[in-house]
Structure formats: structure tokens, C-alpha cells
Image (cartoon, rainbow, N blue to C red; front, side, top):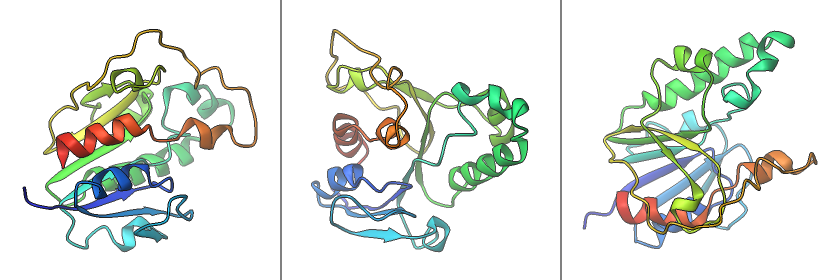
Amino acid sequence: MKKKRILIGCEYSGVERTAFESLGHYVMSCDILPTEIEGNHYQGDIFDILDDGWDMLIAHPPCTRLCNSGVRWLAERNLWAEMREAANFFKRLLDADMPQICIENPIPHKYAVAEIGRKYDQIVQPWQHGHGETKATCYWLKGLPHLVPTKIVDGRAGRIHAMAPSAERSKLRSLSYTGIAKAMAQQWG
């Protein structure tokens, strides 16, 4: 099996980086935040390293202005410019010049879809990969097949949706699931 050069964008947790590294790939995570798991991590702007000869990009761009759950605030707080800026960042990642790309985000609102230029290719749930939770996550794919469920879990709960407000809420809501990361590494690596 050919080892790949993989960039995991907008990831500070190191979860996906570690899953691909365990299969022998050269992987770098990148985020403006420091990594939580020691390893090959670039702290800075992803566009500084995006054109460095990667075979694959998996990216988790900020979703606050793009996701369906926050659409009501666009008009109420006049956040249209921030939404367009977020969509442009997303689209630049999606249009990167590399053979394999997966851009991950929650279900987008119609304005984000229009700005990005296309709808997602797949919805993945944690309960499809060994976690007993619901959290619909959309994948925009280029050169990659749909992720196939690896371990269906019964007794699903909406823990993420029901999370109480806190200083850590957005961070906790955006954590990568190890089961999904392992499925990505095994199926796409």
C-alpha cells in the first residue's frame, strides 16, 4: 500500500492525524490553535501549507455562520458578510489542487450551499461508527468514496444537541470521534 501525505486542516485535537499515522502515513494537522495530542502539527494559517504536495486533505472549517442551526442569526444580527467570508474559506479548501478531499461540516443552510456552490455528498453519524450519539455531519468529497459504516450502535442519544451552554460548549461540540477517524484511515488511507 502506497503511503500518503495527508493534511488534516482545522484540527487541533490530533484524533484524525493519529488514526492515519497509525497506518504509516505522513500526516500533519493544522489549526490556529496548538495541538492537544503531541505530534506533527502546524499552528498557523492552513493556506501557508496547503500547496505543499499533499495527496489528501480532510478539513473541518469553522461552521458557525454556515450551519443550519445558526441561520436565524444571519438576518437578526446582520452576519451576512461573516457568512460569505466563512463560505469563501470553505470553498478555497474544497477547490484545493489535490486528488482527494473531504470537507466536513454540519448540515448547511441554503445560503451557505449557494455560496459554496454545491450540496454535500454524504451525511455521517457517530452511531454508524461505534459511538451511541447522533450528530449529523456532512461530507463534501472529491476523489474519495462515501465512508461505509463500521459499527452500528443502537440506543442513540442526542448528547451534542442537548449540551448546556458553557465556555467549553463549542469545543466539545466540535470534537472528532475516534470511530469515525479510524474508519476514515482504514477506508481512505
